[in-house]
Image 1 (cartoon, rainbow, N blue to C red):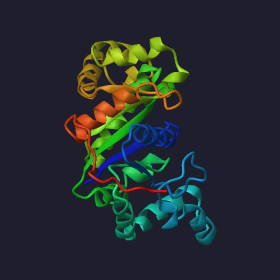
Image 2 (spheres, rainbow, N blue to C red; image 1 turned 90 degrees about the horizontal axis):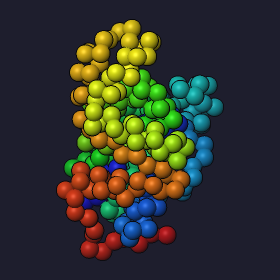
Image 3 (cartoon, helix red, strand yellow; image 1 turned 180 degrees about the horizontal axis):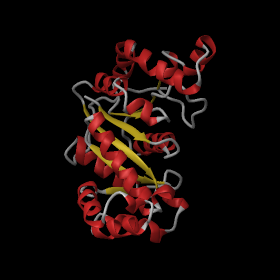
Length: 261
């Protein structure tokens, strides 16, 4: 039975690049993996998807045919996909790959916070084991209140998708090592983040430090995995986290991997 890796995150967080790099990482380590594009509105991809949702529904075509705007077309496409989910599921499962990496739509809120998104993922995964990767852009996370907001969104997404989740700090090649270490240190000492959030006047208008600390302690229970999809920094660690969730730490191989072109 395959393992599903669902790549989530806000627009610009690096979902498509990470999907491409993660599939290559798995293949380079002799692990059978495929990429599934689940974004019906994407124009260009850095990889050739093994399964492409645009063959079932295409948001660009809906814009032309129905006169919809970009968001309306994406909404319609995701809803339409739910009607074709069995065909898509059959194509994905027929490949018999060990790892199935799913690249979700760029506009995450349209996918994750409507009924269609979780329905689609649940139908594709079925009884297989799955993990969600929630990507947080390190450039955005450089401001403590932004990181706090991203963690809140990550928690909301996990509730919606109902999957084990790993938070991933992306694009660390674009920020200093000191900043990455600082963000990681918040998970060892939540009071550091709480203090910095409250020191931001805009962030402190709603909550005091004690209120923030209560929330931060819960949100920081989950580790953050720093990675760069450009130089592949952190991918060994990311793979270890994924294995811990889906395979209890043991590598997974089929007896006879299916060859593909």
